[in-house]
Length: 110
Image (tube, rainbow, N blue to C red; front, side, top):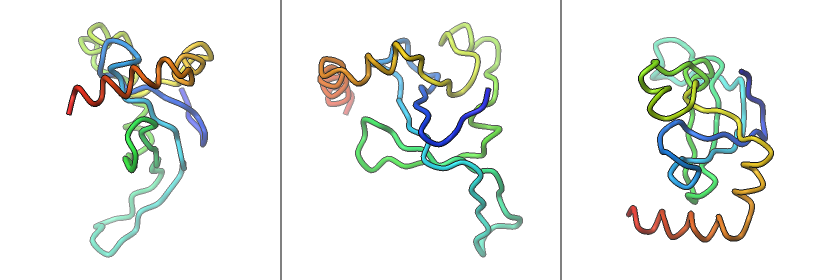
């Protein structure tokens, strides 16, 4: 699996799109070489949560797309930590009905 800027992905945790975090990939191949780094961190991915304002994250590429342990694959129905949304899933998350349900769900989880 590979990801690129603009891809929409779902995190493995959760049993439905409503429960899963949905991310948009912002940048791929970013390097962090700050003074506090013992060694530069290469090939980072920057991604944002589509349904939580201001939630921006970074993670090493290989870790982000890494395979889950078999027990988690069975539990969550995903092979990788994140997976690209299908065209059908993209249509669902862009619908006004889903956006409303997701907003209500997230409000309830606070």
